[in-house]
Each structure stands twice: as C-alpha cells, then as structure tokens.
Length: 426
Figure 1 (cartoon, rainbow, N blue to C red):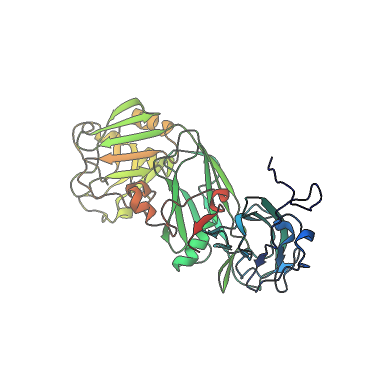
Figure 2 (figure 1 turned 60 degrees about the horizontal axis):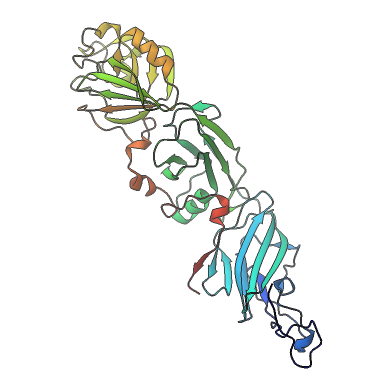
C-alpha cells in the first residue's frame, strides 16, 4: 500500500499530492478537446485518466467515426504518460499501434474497418506511478459502395501431409507493396503445436503460407481472414472470408535417389520401406527437389502427346497406368510400371516419372496422402519450380521465402501480439 502524510493544515485522509489535470485525447484525424478545471488543487481528484479522455471534433464516446482516419491518443499533461493502448473491434480484430518512447502519444499503424464497433482501452500513470484507465467505444461509418476483395483459403478441410501449404486466392489483383501489407496482415494462420511461418506472394492474386520447416505431425492449422471492411485502396475494400481448419497426419517423407535407383519411405522419421525404382532417362530426367503429393488416381491413361512428344515418334507412348500418385501438374507421377521391372533398381528408363512394380506402387499409393512430401535427389534433371507446377514451395530457403512477404520478415504474429505497443522515437 502506498503511504502519504497529510500536509500541515489539511484534514485527515486528504492526500498531500494531487496530480494536475492530465489530458488524454483520442482523436480520429481532428484536434484535441480541452479539460476543464476550477483551478483549486484541493478540489481536484487523484490522477485518473478516466476523467481526462474525450473524442475530439464530431466524434464522441459511443459515436460514429470515419474509418479512413487514423486512431490517435495524446497525453497533454507533462506529468502523465500513456502506458498501454488496446483497440479491438467486436469480431476480435486488434488495431496495431505504436507508442512514443515518452508515452506522450499513441497512434494506429493498421487501418480501421468500416461499419465496425471498436472498444479502446487506455492505461496511464502519473509522475509518481499512480495508474489511470479509461474504456471507450465507438463505431465506424459504412463505406461507400466499392468493389470487394474476397479471399478463398485452401487446401480445404480434411487431413493432409506435413508438406501442404496454405493458399489464399484473392478476387482482385493487389500490386502495391503497402496495400499488400494491409492484406497480408489480415490473413491469420495459427497452428497447434505453434510454428514459425510466413506468407509469400506468388503473384498479384495468390499467396502461400508455410512454416520454416514442414508442419508438425498431427497438428491443427486454423486460417481466417480479418479484411472485412478494411480499406485496401480508394476503389477496394476487404470482404468476409470463410475460415478454414485442417489437420496434418503422420510425417511421411519419400526420398528418391535417382543415382541409386531407390525410393525410401519414412514415417515419423522411421524407415518403412526401400523400393527399387527407375526415374527419367537422359533427355527426360526427373526434377530434383521437394515436391508435394497433389492427388492420387487408381487409373490414368498416360499419352506422350500431352507432354509434347509427337505421336509416332520413337519416344511416343500411350499407356494405361495404375496406382498413380501425382506430384506435378505437368504429369510427373510415382506409379506402377510393370513394363520396366527389369530396369528398376538398376537403370533410369522412364520419361520423367518414378516407376516401380505394381505391388510396391499399390503400397505406396495406400501409404501416402495429399500433402505428403516426395523428394528427388541426385538426378541430372532441373530443379522443381517453386510455383506453377505443383507445390514446390519448400525448394526456397527460409530467407528467400520471407523475402516474398509484404511484411518485415519475422512479423507473423497472433492478433494479440500484433496489437502490443512498440515504442518509437517521439
């Protein structure tokens, strides 16, 4: 308990020190409103920010504000300082902000949403450390009719392998770096167990999210958008997004050594099976690098004309293929190849796929799921493309992946952490 002595001539119980009128102004693009006092220090109450905060201009507590104006909190009294500000709307979206090093001013660094109800909590202290607190609410106006930026998340509900990236498809292109930052900051990914991850802009309409390493086995990944009502630019505002939750299964990784003609499957870091295989022959070498299972087809007709090989040429083919596990959109599979059993384990004779006998292909087909990892090493082929031909995301190292974010690397945070105060120079 803090103890103060009564001043000479003062009645018992009256504090000896009374803080002056410390004015805190919450402003939305307007000037400050003053704080009245009768000038008698004995009539003043102990320092409490609750009686010193007001909205300025046409905005009153409980009133309506312009969502396109920044939120600002100012401490006008040199004897008091702001220690904490939290602004959150009714759907749980926090407004990020920065606090001056001397506690004199806090301002928002992320935009407010239109047609939203906000609660602002301001904590202060006087020069002796006595706390003050104020809670205010306001609403933002409805936006003018503008096109809406919708977001669709992937891959969909279900259970996937640990290599499955999260995808976000935008309904309109976003090119400007600052506008991309607004969009990206509102796309939230959380996992249990927690991991470090980042978004990467594939192009103007598509983002991928992945962790530093593969997802943990048996993790739960939740994805949601917080763009609804947020201004992207003068002609575009964010719309609602359907949230997504999916899980990962066991950590299944298949490694094909093209030089050794062998595929090894690991489950939760334990070796399950070694399989003799054949990979792409000279001129048709299998791509090196990390790929992700895109889907499985028990039967697929493979024709050389679909990959640019002319019908009737020496390299043409038209085959009925069973237990085909797809790893690229251009037609690379792991599949049954009974016609090349004599070469499996000894030579590379395929047109780019990884072939094995039918029993092994069926076992592999039944063991892996969409999102599992298939890696090829020691091939003379090109490297797997990061984007456009499947999920080659993992072929970018972590710094290169983060460089594709519109935010500062390492700023992927929960909404609560994002909204914490970060002192800056006054």
